[in-house]
Length: 348
Image (cartoon, rainbow, N blue to C red):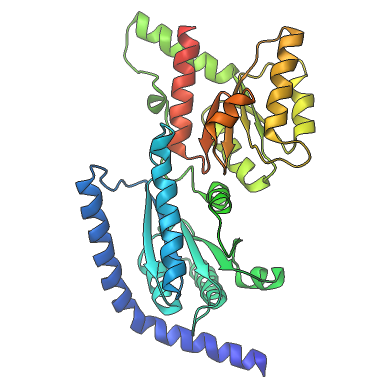
């Protein structure tokens, strides 16, 4: 009987979604117009590679808090001297409205409250995944990348998560550190603006001097070895793919003990991307050990960049960390980091 009720629920959902489609499209258009006007006034017009996020929650307080936290993360980039991570946020209060928005717009991420009235967040995810599967079976081309759906809840079983097709869980109450880490895991770094050589400050101007500088920087990119220390497999894979697409050699380890072995090996690393909250040994402890090891052994120390959900520049500097980047690590941040590093090395 429970399966029958669930089936009826899905059918009701499908019927109601068509009615909600028109209403949601009008709402979304109005919201997007307001967002664009606001950004035009601030001098940061919406760009094609913005990260589009859908936030779905019937509790207006929770909805407002989560959106405010996302906006705060967007603004933090300026404080750390990094390119702004542009988040285009759309709000929704019901599953029906969210379904219409998912079908009428292109979203990179969707934070969905599980306990929505009527159409729950799990139902929404189930129907979205079913819709994608049916479209693929019918040979229909999906113009935009699949939206990553993240469940927002205080408690959920893994079996429910797997059945619905949700990719991850953002546990309530939401903390800023956890939200940063979740974005770092799932932020679409590659398809939101592929980097090319020109974006790294490598000019294509002809001439002997320009050619020499370009070839020197290209050689640095091809011979530079980077070590990433990150215990989250999903985030580590995304960052590794990004640097590899730029032509860099990058090794990835999951904890401080492995990192110590790699850093003490004959390999010469030029850059270390370091998560501070590692199992067993913290990133702070690893940085202190590495800087002391380099002094004792006479080795040249690599540049250490902390990539953390709890950015604290003063504490990072106290432990010998050269730069501190707040999560999420975006394509623009990588471009900025690599451009500065290549410029420094080419003049060094």
